[in-house]
Amino acid sequence: MTDKVSTEQDRQSWDNAIVGKPGSGMVGSHSFGGAGSFFRVPYSRDLTGVDVAVSGVPLDIATTNRSGARLGPRAIRNASLSLAWERPWPWKKDPLAEMAVIDYGDCENHSGGGLLGVAHIEQHVARILDAGAASLLLGGDHFISYPSLCAHAKVHGPLSLIHFDAHTDTWPSSGEGINHGTMFYKAAKEGVVLPEQSIQIGIRTTNDATLGYQILSASDVHRQGCDAAIAQIRARVGQNPVYLTFDIDCLDPAFAPGTGTPVPGGLSSYQALEIIRGLVGINLVGMDVVEVAPAYDHAEITALAAAQIAIELLCLYAASRRPTA
Image: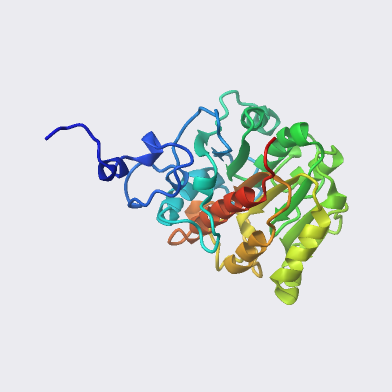
């Protein structure tokens, strides 16, 4: 007998979040123990050879209603453990085997500065992009999309935005009035996002100033169906570089009660997932899932929905990315 771990069975008993290798695929271990990384992928700050870095941004100082989204990244990671036992259905390939994905940990602000001090988020995303990896952020309130968009635009140029939400988040702002309902106004005015090539899905709150964004309301999706929504999204963004942001309150509160600004009448989990699955081939360059506030959740259903959406975005990215030269 030897105490040296050598068998494959022994190797599978190791905690993949600690000693795993990116690209090893889904790790089917129990969901009630071990380190809580995103889908059991390894924690790492080494971006060498990484295709996608998943990061948490535990920030909710930009909320205008109920706070608590700073706890969202942890809740999404924990919920993901229940889903990390096989490749996502109905995708034919496991994105965690097709790509080298790491959990890059959380982006923390050690310099202060409130909402005008969000340079740390942009710098965090920029480090990932500069290494040749893509970024998937877990929020945190929706304001985190703004510094992420700025980092992506510096690499890819003006972006098309695919925005799933109950709210347009295009209300005007100035100075410290920037919040999680104003950042896409700011992004449009600064030329970071191209509204004429962007679309917002699931909207069901009043804001008459669209700024040129195409609005695909929740009622439109319910009446026209997922296939029509997919066709409109694809036509709108074309092959322009796309940033996809998913505010969990796009879903009806029946499917996602754990969020700061819930609005009845939203999309079902099924509708959201079907639409995402229909977007294969878009030029997806960046992603985030935001506004999970676990204090208002029940039985983790909001966090589970967010974790499922996040892994589906990785599936979409894996299926859509262009071969590198």
